[in-house]
Length: 78
Image 1 (cartoon, rainbow, N blue to C red):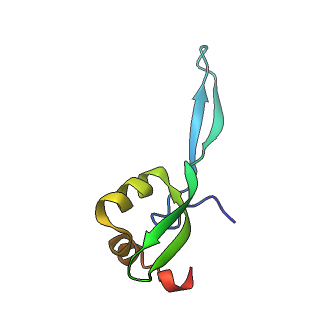
Image 2: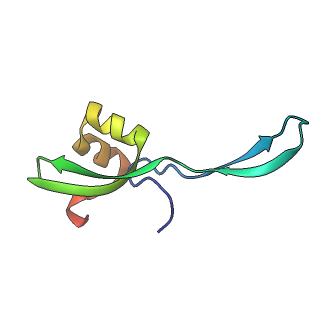
Image 3: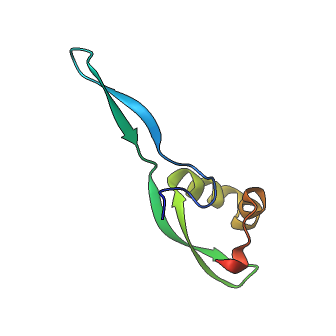
């Protein structure tokens, strides 16, 4: 499984690690993913998703139904 948020699609970013002498080396900045059980009231059950911390905050604000509709995800299949 790739390290990608199931709701927002966030993934790793290519960046540079810059030392004190300004020598630059490539560095991969991974997204902060967490396994999260989210209550889905419409389905009357918990849904286990791999979410970025930003997506967790957005779900708390908007709700899981609105986020799933925007992402085009069918929660019945998960």
